[in-house]
Image 1 (cartoon, protein in one colour):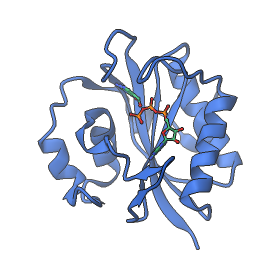
Image 2: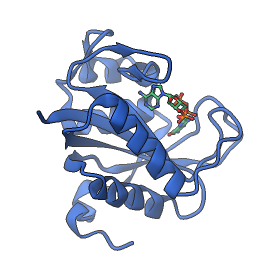
Image 3: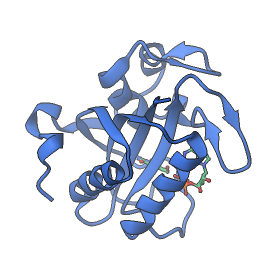
Image 4: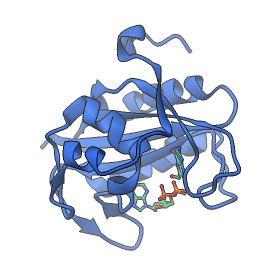
Length: 172
Ligand SMILES: Nc1ncnc2c1ncn2[C@@H]1O[C@H](COP(=O)(O)OP(=O)(O)OP(=O)(O)O)[C@@H](O)[C@H]1O
Ligand SMILES: Nc1nc2c(c(=O)[nH]1)N=C(CO)CN2
């Protein structure tokens, strides 16, 4: 069975846009089909604020992997792209988070879905709303559109419009 999921991608070290695109390419190689994607936004760092600005985007994927295998793949792609774990919420070449997986609710030691902080993060909600603003976030039981309207989104600025790049023909 094919599953539908939404992933958040972020980068704030080095060639940030290249890391986003390399992550998408790497996911495609791991049997993950990209169904839709947002524009790229430049965003103020949240959590640990003494770090450089992020680029963030959201993609919609289809995969036959279960959520645990999908997490393994995301962690593996982060490793391939030289992600180092030092400071919590600190700088990173790439960050891949599973936001939503079908309409499932999962609370295990290593995986929480929906992502536990997604409903308060404008760097996730603004690009997600671009793809599907009527999507309901299970648990929170609100649409993405409603969550965006409740969130301060001043720190999220359009950086490259979706129309300005072709996901099937990324030059990286
Ligand atoms: N929905 C999820 N998506 C990705 N990782 C998750 C999820 N739920 C739990 N995790 C766990 O979180 C661990 C740490 O992830 P990571 O270092 O990327 O956190 P972070 O991005 O710094 O912070 P945050 O979780 O607030 O985004 C992962 O190894 C994974 O086991
Ligand atoms: N703007 C922004 N801030 C963050 C981000 C991110 O992707 N973008 N990721 C974090 C850890 O997941 C912590 N803070």
